[in-house]
Length: 132
Image 1 (tube, one colour):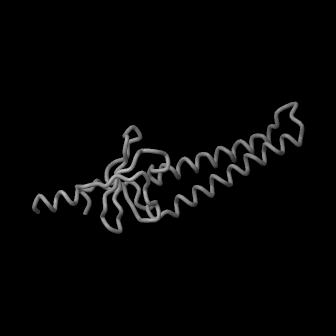
Image 2: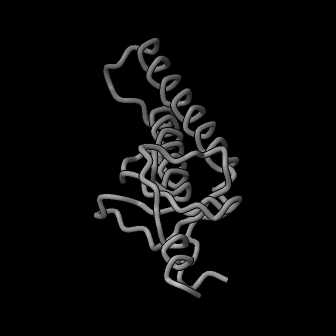
Image 3: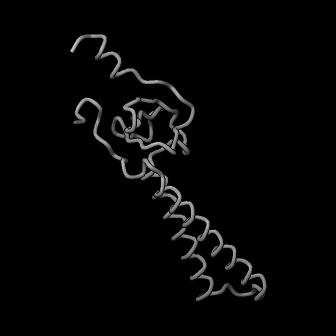
């Protein structure tokens, strides 16, 4: 392989957002402390570098967060149902429980949406140098 071909394979384009409607995988291990994340679009082999912001993080991390928040909201609603705080009027209690249930539904919907992304199945991919 000549130097020109090697340079083309390792060149990464900077983007502000990852195109989540295209299949992608991590180009290298993800580390939360890194300023950028490097991905490969598996449909074209194009390498992209994006800022490490919550919306550019790997699908597995965003899905885990949505799942945790949904479970936490469900737990809070159940806890309030089983052990209502003293002194809270029934209407207020019902309103708080409904809010936790609604939050859980929203987080589960977010989880399903994340898992439906084309790249969700490619999280944790091998580094480009060792990919087959």
